[in-house]
Image 1 (tube, helix red, strand yellow):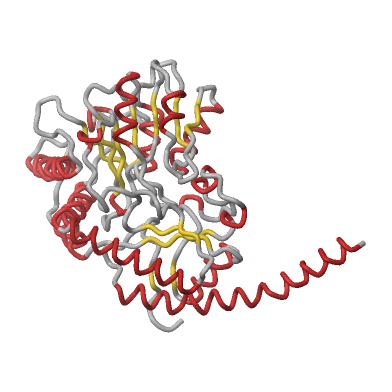
Image 2 (cartoon, rainbow, N blue to C red):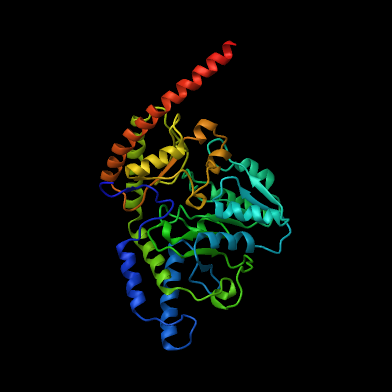
Length: 402
């Protein structure tokens, strides 16, 4: 295949920024000890680790400056952070777990497992626009509930959820609220304290940081039971030796975004709009999900009505355009997007939906080159479908005339 592939799947993972790689390499070369050790090498490592923790917390709007401030727990990624939140937050409460219908598999899968183990799980519905139905949530969420889990921005559609409004409702009902903010952090401003949530997760590799590290931010008054045992690190809530280099990489990637955040947000929005305008020219029957509601600046979920999503994604891959038909954590699955199913999309929309997601390394030139490849691919698939559709129509006409 001539030329480099055009990568439009940043919701799955993002390339490591050179500045981040350099910071991690410097950290690895410094010869730090175990940050839990009491000798000088360990104390040096602990200082670097805690500096990274505080930087991440401040950028995310957490209280890291008071004696009993918010806790910034390092995990192996968002999947672990989400598991820790759903299984550990307010674990002793007997009330139900409330989970939205559009959650990422790392939340929905945990909820399904807890349900199988006997915990009451209540699904919070979304509107036809893919936004959490706040009126329904107000009816369903009752005082005494164990936890509410609603994501900040959807990984398939980019649609933003009314987290601040939901947080006010949860506070009134005395139920903690957890939000998976993985697709939002490093793309838009996320302020933990201003949102009013009880816990929030993020993952470094979604904003040009390293894989293998994420965080769970949690308020000091919220109870949390650990998943792992055998160490005192991070207050015993997530034991195990912390990786100083990964923490530095996550911190540096978030700092890179923060200093450029307005320019990045504007650039991503313009590139997304450029892509969508081009897709409409290619496919007049295109349906862009969430285009009339608030959404993340880097995500486009579009249905190419008349084409089959898996065939389109594979054909684009062969043409040198990387995109997706859903979450990377559900790769290999032929199931349609849960977010689109929850919004009540029809089968033609479900079966033709493809996701394009942009990042800090996406350029206008790459968007234009991608469009130049997408057009011919769609045309080829359309021509390939015509004989099959014509044969189906002929059989239907013959059958109806009998």
